Image (cartoon, rainbow, N blue to C red; front, top):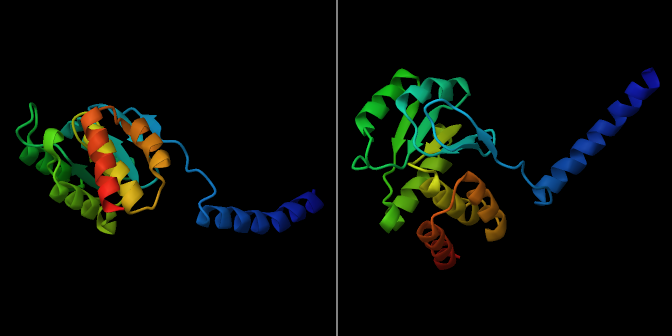
Length: 185
């Protein structure tokens, strides 16, 4: 038994180094995004340890989001959308111990300013780990696609698979994201 344990202990550092080098070289695929159920939240996808994306999220879900380890909520919905109460959500987030960031994004006419505000919010380490949501997860997925390619350096095809898993189904948002990426490359 001691020989087996000693052999494992000798192999582990080599395996860890090889795995780390593969990740640095971009050779390993990240874990697939995973759907999660949170009462009061629609279409929730855990992207990784620092990011969860979703559609419409009611303030009563904020306590559970906090219990899952998230420290901020980034909301892409506009106050004009049916059922949206930005100030109420801001207060509920504070009561749950969450930082609240509002980046309103117009689905039919996403602006470059909205994209910049989104990228600033999601790359700010003070917002991590973060829960990002909109109405259906389409806006989140489109802007996350842009972030993955323009900030993280992912290939479009790889980022698109993740965006679709998050909830990108809107053809207009898909086109906007791909056009934005093409213009900024």
